[in-house]
Length: 362
Image 1 (cartoon, rainbow, N blue to C red):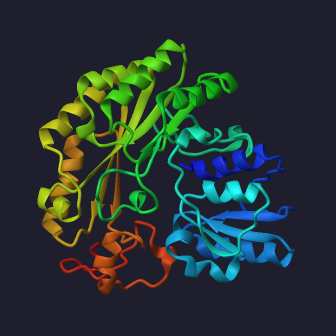
Image 2 (cartoon, rainbow, N blue to C red):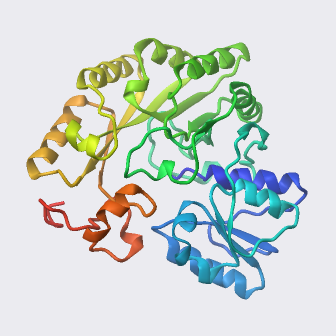
């Protein structure tokens, strides 16, 4: 499902607050003084081609996001500046008329409550026309992404979530203020918490549930988390607050494989107990699995697939291990890389020589 970028909506809010006219585009060329391009690995050629066309019209172009931060060489010849890091601090300076040049550090903002709320009215098309696959409780046309925290306190070596900035969380009152504004603007909004680990702090989750109840907010929401950061009582409280769908990583059945990748294994009995309770409550679940860890064999992958079927989440998503530039896993696998086209680093294409499996088998 196509979920719009929270960072783009934050940047729109910062610029609009400073009195700038903000336009958002998915690829049409628009009039303007400065263009900010959200970077990606799998579509960087399109992004740089668009930037070239805008610069040819005299527009100053900046690249932002995780890929431009970690692989500036892909974008440097196609833009006037690169914001390295979470973009908001750099965009605040831009809003004051300070246009940077070349690569500049955009520092992480520690007080996330100081940011204006994302302006979804500036960063989305008519949502009724956005058709897509119905995922869980999520309405066609998607929902409203929300970041209650940033970064991730875990240490998985393959994950890009923790390589841009450290872990910080917003106050519960500030999150509830944003939810209240969404409820004022949209009847019963569907909110997509984009935190890598939503229920990291149990007491914060309970406090948020209390605040949603105290303010009489009616909404439904989904989140991504770890199953060992959930229990039956917490799930019941979250459900009452509007929790209807969750995604979670299992990755591999083998605890030794997970440990080698910096991921803490979760006991199978606990995984089953949480999934069973979700099924009873009617909470839709999506499990994530990664095939092709260095330790994987034909047998271990078959065991992981069997386990996914047995665990019985509503959905299961399988990806091939992909070393993302900037992660510790990338440094480890760099000598084994066989793919030089970054647009193939999409999670479904083998990119390195596997010790036990051929590319065709993967």
